[in-house]
Image 1 (cartoon, protein in one colour):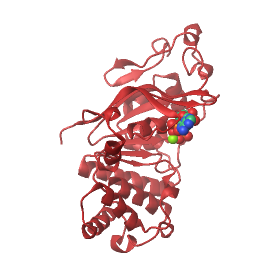
Image 2 (image 1 turned 180 degrees about the vertical axis):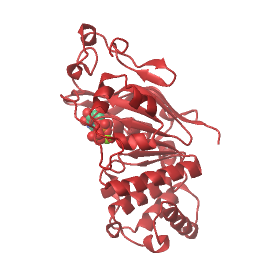
Image 3 (image 1 turned 90 degrees about the vertical axis):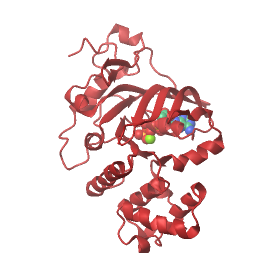
Image 4 (image 1 turned 60 degrees about the vertical axis):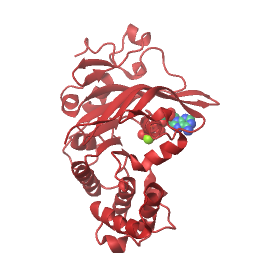
Length: 326
Ligand SMILES: Nc1ncnc2c1ncn2[C@@H]1O[C@H](COP(=O)(O)OP(=O)(O)OP(=O)(O)O)[C@@H](O)[C@H]1O
Ligand SMILES: [Mg+2]
């Protein structure tokens, strides 16, 4: 399969104009995604991961605004599309499983009914065809006895099964891109592993490009080839996953990786805590956003704002002292 550029996001800036001030949720980020790959986005709570993806999906609402940047999907600028075009694109071309969506399944419709409704909006399939396709898609996400299960209500599904159903819904119209926003936080490790196996299969079978947002570094190590580390609204490091583990460049990434016990351990490896907290995105510090927590920070780090710069192929970092620290 030829690698095709699916998504090319350049210099994306998304802000929220709240009464307390301007929240710089996404502050000039660039990343891309090719067919049949999974890109990971990792960062602490409040670093702008979800807002980044909601921007791509055209789902930023008042008081939020995409200020600048481009979002190209297969070379088409999504920021120039109408609401109607974006509604069609969501589901048709880009499927997303939203954060905390386990609870968002409608309890009053059957699982099959909910998947069928998505297809009703996005395809010309007849009701009979939709019913057939629903069973197929439930089968493809590993739901046993799909014909019977399609008639179940969400409460009759376990957490892992509901997550599979949500993925089924997101991929029911064969999107080119699947965005998963912390898809397994509520699930135990065994079910989590099964969900990621499923995503691997879908990627191999359909060439889907996947963006995986997570707090869990072990998940990234297992499923992603490339990863972007976000801090306070910015991507501070982009790297191939092996290089990142081998030699993290940004002090924040170093901090994250330093305290991981064992990547192959069975337990969930949540982001380890680095002393201090993510700054208020309304009142960002002068200079580098990470300076209040950075043990390497010196005078210039409190004055100049580091840009994400390419160090070598596929490897970028935003740190003024990257060449000086060992
Ligand atoms: N509707 C909104 N109005 C105002 N601020 C918002 C809104 N939505 C998000 N934000 C702010 O944007 C910033 C980034 O939030 P976002 O949800 O993207 O973080 P995240 O990295 O996904 O965190 P988490 O890991 O907890 O999901 C936060 O400071 C958040 O408070
Ligand atoms: Mg989020």
